[in-house]
Length: 303
Image (cartoon, rainbow, N blue to C red; front, side, top):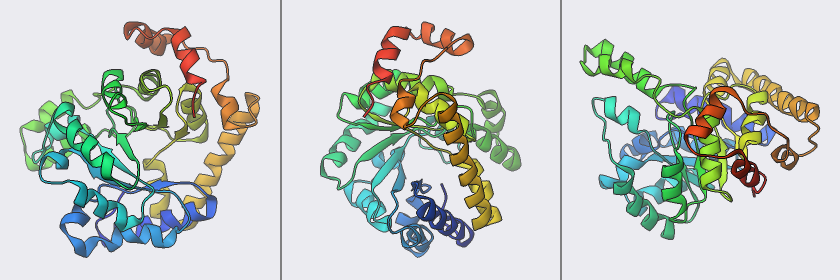
């Protein structure tokens, strides 16, 4: 989620300690700063040192792959953490409104990511950053061999809104335009469905506004393999190790409670839980030509 300064390194260390004790995974924030400024790498390396046995996901931005980054830099990011996978994140809406943004179309990046993936030592996770993944985008990458997706749907932290506030402080004219697009994106529930339908046997992380254990279970029932969140864990980690540990234990309790109440003994049982989809989400599916029968058949076929 973070990294690059002494304080953020401290937070990475706290998160890593807790996930090692509890037995869950973590992903760091973009490592671009550590690739370009080796003196801050320790703020990322602390994650593996404090969590030697836990799954850790490295992170770099997709735009960098069209601006000089290649296998060397991606392997550096992976080796920095002894990572189990690397997320290549797309954030087109933020790039558009960021003064220093570097917007690219997916097709301009796809070939580079595909070439890198063939030689890389760990899997690549195709990740959004608060805008959600569309079925067209997922189909494009799925057809090119990618099998890991992190949807990061609209509903959590809006990075367009972040750019709006940055712009207002700098009196940048883009701030007013960013306000117009501050809620841009595919809602998390919808992007999970679109991703699952487009990538039936892929591993899908449901994220974007997930704040508690019940929402993790809802994400899994809609098609995700696991749930993920950043903001609530980050807020807890700022308060210290015990606060984060208590928060995550609460989330785990809520997951177990929800599973018990729907009669699921295992996560795989959640895949089979009957769903009632109505309102805006049902309308979304109909407008996107995703039939309930198609969705039901693919959501139960997860790995």
